[in-house]
Length: 246
Image (tube, rainbow, N blue to C red; front, side, top):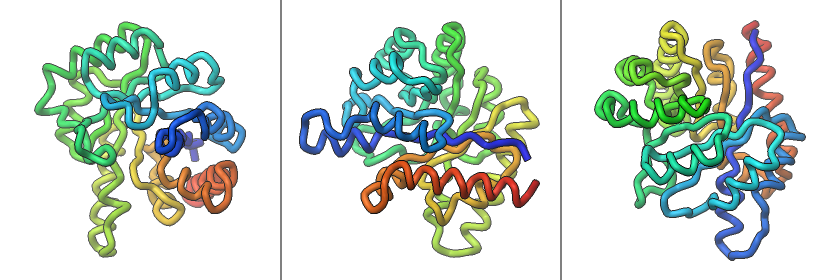
């Protein structure tokens, strides 16, 4: 079974820092720990309101990281300008609402086809890989291909939040089918949002998903163990899931 990459989102390290001000805990230090613990990349979302990651965090990450940076961004001129200035490994376009606590749901690529194409093409022209964060919906996957995206990241929140076993199985099947469709259409498939030790195994076992992006849960677990321990356990669970279906 092909190796599955782990991207660690460090946004909420910055959330803790910003709750009190100052420089601790440092997201760059967290990124270095993540790499040592088995992360293959780092994800950071620079939001319009700068509620967690800051512009200076992005600058430091780009300058000092030795593993790829996945720059999560809204489809706005401001964020495009920042991405083009820094040229991260990848730019992941996500929906963003000022009132939301975290990213809720996926982009409506089908409805925003003409607008999104401009951002996708601008990023790709700068040799930045482009990912679109979407629901497990064939229409959105087809639209992602049409606008020229390299990658789709499937939103796993509904799967992770489902308490009823039948509802969770239904969500799992949607994700599984979407990942297979993405591969058939020539898109690299990633997944993320809400994944925990208890929910990661079935998603990690889907062979057409090549990368998982996980953050909030790992930062929370670090309170009780350590960031390194939490990431190491997630890495092991992912590897075990892949090996079980090899």
